Image 1 (spheres, one colour):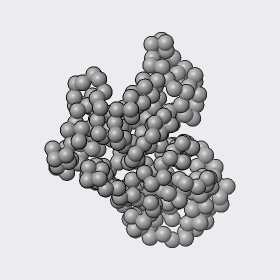
Image 2 (cartoon, rainbow, N blue to C red):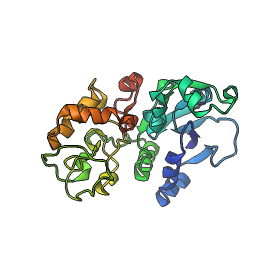
Image 3 (tube, rainbow, N blue to C red):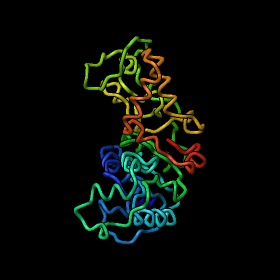
Image 4 (cartoon, rainbow, N blue to C red):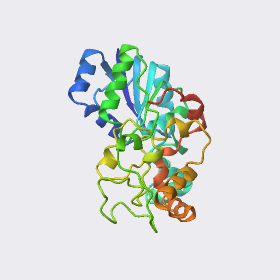
Amino acid sequence: MKVSIVSLTCCAGCVSSLLNASDALFEVLFGDFEIVYSPTFVDLKEVPEVDLAIVEGGVRTEADEKLIREVRAKSKILVALGICATHGGVTSLGNVTSLKKLLEKEYFLLDTSKLPELEDLMYPICNFVDIDYYIPGCPPMPFLIVHTLKSIVSGKPPVRHQSVVCTECHRKIIAAKLDRLYGIYEKEADPVLCLVSQGFICLGSMTREGCGAPCPRAGFTCFGCRGPPDSLMYRSRDMYAFLIKVISRRTSIPEETIRGELYRNPFIFHTFIFSKFERSKARERVI
């Protein structure tokens, strides 16, 4: 199976996670895959025809859009790897301001005419092409990537994870009585109790499971890098309202107080920016 690995606007963390699969990756690569195109590893200028294309990053420049359309046209199967490719991800935080203001703030000392032609917003790749499989994560866990690739090679549908991170966390959820929310560094977290019950803003209740919950297990809040589960993704539900109710039920803090805290921090929902196109097209394809 001929494979291409393509990077759009991103930090390259998802390809790094793929490489971190170590021996399991070598088993796949040398057993079933032939990487014929990857600017990170292979010095090849033309995008070739392949059986499988793995794409990380989102579309922020006109060059990104041109490349993803070419990759889609030249691949039988296309896998969106990582939250930037599947939902917009961290890079979509640039969407909270206008393109004009962004350029003025970040590049005011440069001649902006020499910058790449930018799109008006940061987009997931599904806005431009059809995707066969989505592997969300920031970055996706190596075992998730390898298991998905092995399933594709064998012709079997990859395992889909449809519930929420709380099912993998195993912390004890209790109804607490708190007067405010806390930053994760403001106090030491109890290793047994649910982080939300302790007043931390954890997104495990609205994030797709499958990662093994490494962050909350280690005492750090889930920041939603796997995006929403099926129950939220396929319904027109207000995610802010959903999270507000969850936090209020577990802490007894009034919903209005929680709402004010969440709206002051746009980073909280950076991994939940996904398009209407994805809502309608991605069913049964998110791993």
